[in-house]
Image 1 (cartoon, helix red, strand yellow):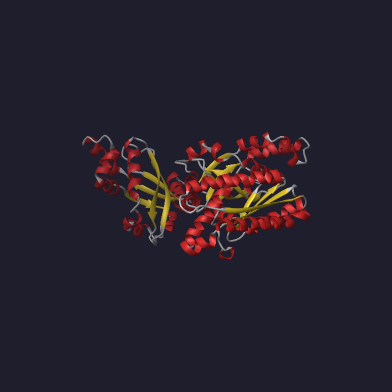
Image 2 (cartoon, helix red, strand yellow):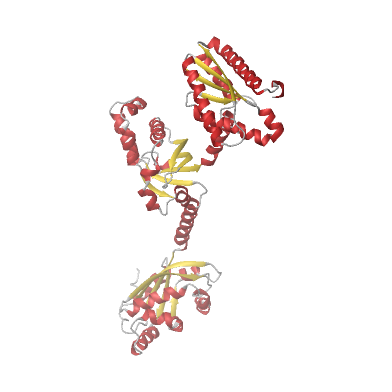
Length: 487
C-alpha cells in the first residue's frame, strides 16, 4: 500500500526531474537594493543602471543561489551544485548586461515575474542562448526570499535564426552588388491574362497579338516591379528606386513593344526561361542596348509571382559592331560606300532592279600631280572633298561609292538618261560651291553616264560609263595641256 506523499516531497521530486533548468534563488537582497534606490530618489531605473554600471553588478551580487536541478547541472556541464555556484562568474558574463537591466525594470515596476532572453556560458566554454522566466513564489511576495527561475536552452533556434539571417544578408548582398542589373518582378497578373485568353479558345496567340496589339500594352501595365539592385539605378540614371519606378514608362518604350510581344509568345508556349537582346532607355532618354535573361523562379512556376531578370548593358558592343559594319561597307577616308558594298549593290541590282539603272562613273582629275607636288595629305584632303560633294548630291536608294584610288561611282535605280543628267548637273553645282568654300586648289571631276535596262546590261552599262568618263578626262587634260600619262 502506497503512503501519501507530502506537498514538499512532491515539489522536491518535480523540481529535480523537470525537463528544463530550474534555479531556486533568494532575491531578498535584491528587494532591499531596489528599495534603497527608491529612497535615493531614483525614478528611471534604466537610466540609473546605464549611468551606474556598478549598480548592475550589485543586482547580480544580490541574488543568492539556493538550489538547482539535475537538468541545470547537465546543461552547464557542472558535476555538482557547489562547482556550479563557485563558477558563476564564468556562467554569467559578457552579454548579460542588457538582459540584467531588462530584469530589473520588470521587478522595479512591481511585477511578480520577469522574462527575457540572454546568453550564459557552460563550464566547458559552450555559449548558451537561454530564455529566462522568473517568478516570486506565492507567500514570498513581501520578502522575495524564494524566486523560481527557469532557463530554456534555445541555442539551436537562435543559431538557426542567425544562420537564416546571415543567409538572407548574403543573398541580399549578392543581389545589391551584382555586376549586372537585376530586377525582381511579379508576372502573376500577366499569367492570369494569358490564361483568360486561352480559356476563350485562342490557340494561335501570335495572330491574336497582331489583331489585338493593345493586349501587349495591357500586359506591360500589369507587371509589378518588386525590387531592383544598385547597378540598375546607375544603368538607368535613377537617384532612387522610387524615381526609377516612377519613370518606367520612359524606360520601356519604342522597340520594347515588339520584343515584349515575342516574350509573351514564348511564355504562351511555356518557355519560362528566355534570353534576348532588347532596347531600353535611361531616364535621360538615351537608348541602352541590353542582353536580357528572364526566368520564372522554380517555386513560382505555378503563378509567375516572382520573376528574375538580369540585364547586361551591351551598348558599347553594339556600337563597336555598328562601327565594324560601317567599316565593312564604307570608305573611311570619304565616308562614302566602299568597293565591297558597290560590288554587292551591282549584284543586287542585276538580280532585282528596279529598272532602268543609271550609272555615273566619276574620276578626280589631277590627284597624282597633287600627291607628287603637295604630298598625300593634300591628296587625301581632295578625296574627302569629293566625298562631301557626292554625299550631299545623293539620297537613298541612290548609292555613291569610292571604288578605287581616285575613282567613284553613283548607282541610280529606276532612273533614266534624263535623271542621270540631272544628277551630273547637281554634282557640278555642288562642285562649284565646294570650290568657293575651299580656296586654293580647285576640285575637278570627270564624269560619264550610261543606262542599263535589265540585269544582263548592267555590267555593260558600267563599262560604257567608264569609257565616257575616260573620254571626258582625256578632253580635260587636252584642254589643260597636260600629259595624261602623268596622272
